[in-house]
Length: 159
Image: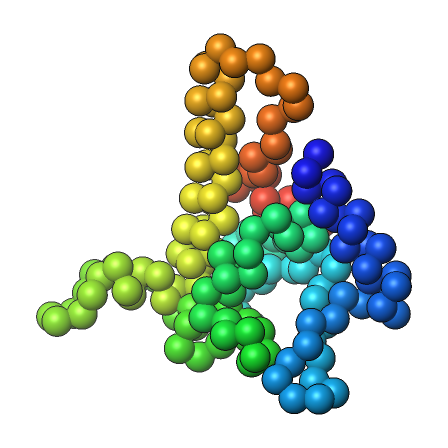
């Protein structure tokens, strides 16, 4: 219910401010538009997709802070793609680290691992919280929040 309320408020603000939610930048006249619809998450162009792309519904995630996903964003800079050089731009799945390399660092720079770790981990944590609440015996006034998909076929829906 809370997320629906936030979504309605965002929609009203978008209508008031010219059909786009605008966040001010550093200087005068600098603005950044926040996508209000579905974003297609795809592998880099150099990678042949083995599954259909994921349709990420951006507005239903507005209950989280922007830095939850855009962890390197510094408010006064443009938001960059996850696959920007130096972030999650690895296109080959790491098998093992070379001498002196951090295995976990290599894993997370691989674009697919980054998306999966961020998205699936968050959805599984929500699922665990819901299960704890269900098992607690407390009387709930509202329905538990939707936990989102945690399986391949739930995210990678064929076109």
